[in-house]
Length: 288
Length: 253
Image (cartoon, each protein chain N blue to C red):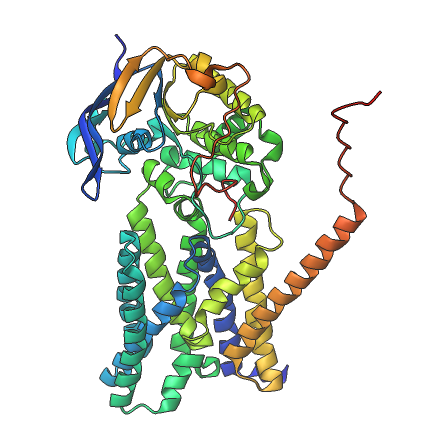
């Protein structure tokens, strides 16, 4: 535990905990509307922002927020149109994003280790300024996702009904898109653009195996994300493993544990209360 | 004569250039219980989706509560019951959470739910006989109970007009009776109803007017027609499939 005496480890831990809490709070809405991998796509686009930032000597995170937001809005507009070509448009956006990022990083003076820090995360190099950005934006994401839960739930659950209820459906959809972009960019420093979707989606997938309602799923997913982030950083510090990967692997491990335990529990319960044997059907013809 | 609640004048709807509704005119006044009847593909669902603004008119006009549809903002006056809920991503939701969505039209996006909201949700759950299932995930309910959940969601908003799309399709007898009871109460309290149905079943005594849609036009408007052919037999059980892609339950994947 001595490692946590160092300020850089404390910053890593706090940053990871904020992201572990905020990412599933958004992720539950993405899972609900079957957009579980959208975070991955926005992450690809954000990489172009990182490249542009490094090339222009501006804050890569800040430029990434702007580029990812534009990308997320573009994805939402394609989705809302509901055309089959949307699938291809998304593919173009994703791969254009990652290729653009690699190209721009190559053009700048940055080394490949700079790129790696954004691809796979670099928690231990978080500066005080980064941490403040993560904390402020993370708090904003949490407050928005929790305060607007009834409306966001309605839109993600049944978009037509939400429209007939007079809800500002397009605004709420864009809000989810922009929040996705912001979550991706702040989580980029922790787990990297290639692993971001895991923190948004896996805790939700774990929680919904045992929960009964939307609110309880959200709470449990946030708790699981928080736990995975905290224990992941601790494992990384003690076993000297990459923090981002440790956090994600722990989140996936808890999914497997809950899936197996849930299966065993259901099987035991079924054995404890055997289904009543169906009543024998009466004979149609009684032979005298 | 009562005030008109829904007015459709020379409404035309087409999908990709193919007309689905041709020159339909219809007025529903306060207190009426109008059933839109017709075969599959006749355009009856399109008619109510156009009234709700979910599909655009290519010609004609629609007025809701004396306001052109385009300018209509008082959505809390309308309760909509879709045929089934769209396929969600599998995140569980309790019956109460789904029904509570019905309060949003009245409450708006920003205001948190208050005591009046909770009381309205409780009343709606009681009205459809699901008060004891409020904390259960909707996915564990039968098809009929899921349909009652959607009706409770509409009732929770305390609307003046209920618009229902095939509320009894594929619904068990107990749920149909519960639904007919809830509808009777709604009408007794002064509500107006526009519903689409394939057949009326236990709803028949509640309906005050039948509008029959055939090939995109209205071919009958007035008294509820008597069932004809084998549909008229007292023990007729309506079991033919409603479509090749019809899922077993609302939330089944």
